[in-house]
Length: 332
Ligand SMILES: [Zn+2]
Image (cartoon, rainbow, N blue to C red; front, side):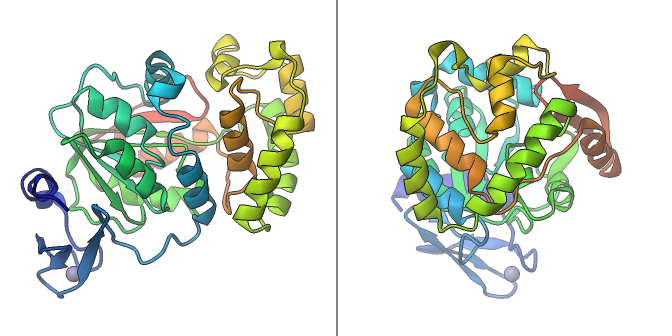
């Protein structure tokens, strides 16, 4: 770590960190964070504080985001699209950075944090998988972001410290999404906001697609992630996709206001649920692999997620337009 990075840890972020096991204060030593209570050491490797020894059940993502480290950054997919996607899923405004700290829970390669950092947001970007390596590379130029590797069920933060916690496309890949939601919610300040987006199980068409897709995912996710990736990256370019069928994910939702209609694209989606229709081939490979590879991939309804918010003491709970995305405010 260079001096600049140590400073960043010391003054901006260090005060909210705490030992994930005993809650003790963490002090910065030369190349680790050290718990003052039990002496546990968390190494800082390649600039990233590590609070886990392995990537646990997220190996498929480690591979995905190391290969596709830049596939979903604004410079590739466009700032306008990235902004719209974030705002529709979170109910937040990219151009209005909050005064306090923000948590990107499950940052992947840093797609959202990169957008927000450029607009002056102060963030901690966390992921369990080795995607943190890609995120670090994409974010290291920003003084206002700290990337760490940690388990969302055992985060190294004090309670009630974040003004905003968002988690987009992540909780459905954890073994118990509701449990992880509750763990995350504890770190939101009173009066702060939490926004999450998970895979949808809303509507009959989506339900059929999901049940069918689950059969493929169960089979595919048994393969070694590298073999599956090789297979996907060989097969996907050979599937002919007529141009009119190609659409960005958001277009499919916006056009039908969240409800999927039986268009040719959606009909094909039901037959071959893992097919991606994104125009860019690189992203299509990423999407297909992302659909088939995760060990856990659960589906949820608005009612279910709204219940999670209520149980954790949130108010002003809002359904957001992209299914299933919900935001709420933590009671004062
Ligand atoms: Zn400790």
